[in-house]
Amino acid sequence: MTGSEVIVHGTVEDDITWANAVAPSRMLPAVYRNDPGALMLARGYAQALAIPEINAITGIDVVDGKPSLSANLMAALARRAGHKVRIKGDDTSCTVEIIRKDDQDYTYTTVWTIEMARNAGLANKNNWKHYPRAMLRSRGISEGVRTACPEVLYGMYYTADELGSERHETERSDEALSDGPGPLTREMLHGTDERQERSKQPERSPTPQAPGEDIVDAEIVEDPPDGPQTRLQLRQLASELKRTGWSGDQTFALGMISGMVQRTVTSTKSLTANETDLVLAELRKIVVPVPTSGPGTNDQTEEAQR
Image 1 (cartoon, rainbow, N blue to C red):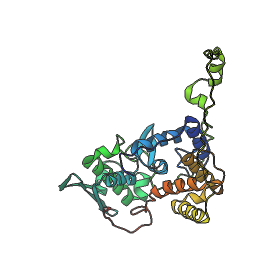
Image 2 (image 1 turned 120 degrees about the vertical axis):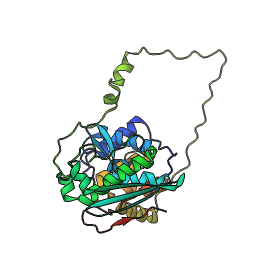
Image 3 (image 1 turned 180 degrees about the vertical axis):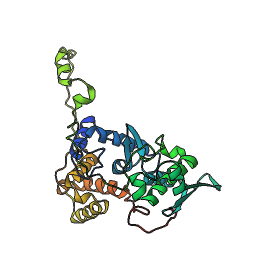
Image 4 (image 1 turned 90 degrees about the vertical axis):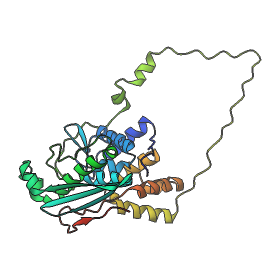
């Protein structure tokens, strides 16, 4: 997907159905769980950044009402724009080099060290104590992308850590949450009950017909029939759901698929052939990041995507 593409969604009712279906999922980050309104905002961020919704949900956090991008998403946006991003680091320092697509003779270099973290009062925070290499990497990428190619961030210039969050971006929160705001309704978004508003409006009289004017029934043209999905499509769909990690949470997966096909889906087997092709196309756009500097990894260097 290029930065110029626009994601088009259905009606408000479709968005509400999608958000209410996905909100209870345990696969959601804590900031979105049981909060359909937050999910609809994430859908808006996805449209602004021209990325799949799942990448917005997993890559955008909210700290004190301010959206923040993960370092992984920042690097991905820079690379998608054609800039080269090289990252090298360990538990004591991280160096990020960025070469812009439109200025390949100059290399932007950002270095973050554990000593800099100590001087900034960061080293004693839990996430810095447990994941120093990952936190150095996050700071280096954020500062590097913000300096070299800020236009790819669309105003979301900081990571959650830079905005004061104590949660490490590779962690999935299992904290107990309240029931949240509850399901959304159209009336909640518009502030009024449309049925009441319509009941207040006077009934309109039918438009008078001119003498001698014949009424001709409009021809109804139906869409061509869409056949059932094939076994190959089902196998491909199962493979993609497993690759993205959605197969572990049926509620989440069906909610996201419902949003893609713009109707409520209770089973992947109920999808038509065309709908299955649409879902497969959307799933294949999702890039599943491989941790390169989080807990339990040993890779020291990330090379730019060619």
